Length: 363
Image 1 (cartoon, rainbow, N blue to C red):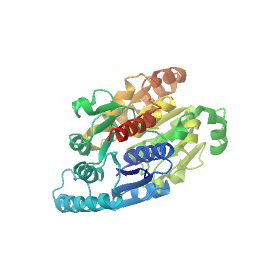
Image 2: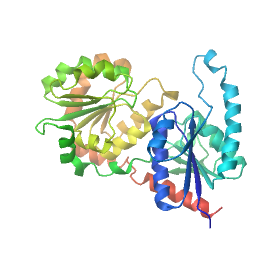
Image 3: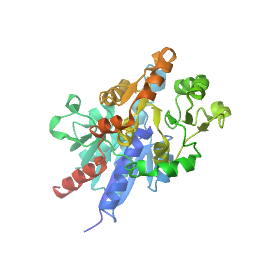
């Protein structure tokens, strides 16, 4: 029997890419001889991240619709048409046994053409409010893997499996790495550590708020590991090594970062929500208001309902940050771990792979 071939498409943000890579890694363990090909959008983050993870990737000429800008959307119909032709060529040449989409516009043409070529298909929706591409694809794919309950608001109920979001394997037991993390980041073990996460590129409002409140953090006697993102590092690096403050552009060792944290301040992307639930530490979520369908707010709301996370909207941040920070410092960590356990789904990746295995058997 020939080795299985898997084509995986998704991207635009780390929230779409990291689950895709996690699924590929788990499939590789299940099928050591399998072949993998990723498909992403030209010029997007996946074209860098996927090869770094050890996988081949092909780019297609596709981009999302720009809200509120007719001019920027002029080329969209042409890009969509070209991407469909590119997808036909890629699929006929690679001839996969299974196609997987993890969201983002790049997954649309590939999964659509895969369906019409009679290739088994699965999409994975990370957010509690479904994206436009996955909503459209759900009508034709075989399986829809979701991370939140009540997703039959968006998808056919008979296709849904509740799995949770795939997370990086190294995050499954961060507590055992506490000492290693403190040494790695050269932390003072007598002080609490707050980790600030604004995504790989960074979050302007979060960064400005942290910078404005540095005297407060000093007064509270806490130390900061502040990932400010690639767009803002030059602006905020002047605060590095000031009174227990570390400023980083990006941190690769996320397991050690989570292990080092006593508390976190974070955006509310789907992958972040799943990782934070798994890690089980008090967190202040500041959803980005600049995302499709305001999905980060709904993600944050879902985690906050457990009682272990606080939510602060950007429009309220100037007025309420100090008060909410004090609330964060009073949350009992042990209670959070217990509450988050019911939300976290550490076997998400394995459950998705099991479903793919069963689909392959039934082909």
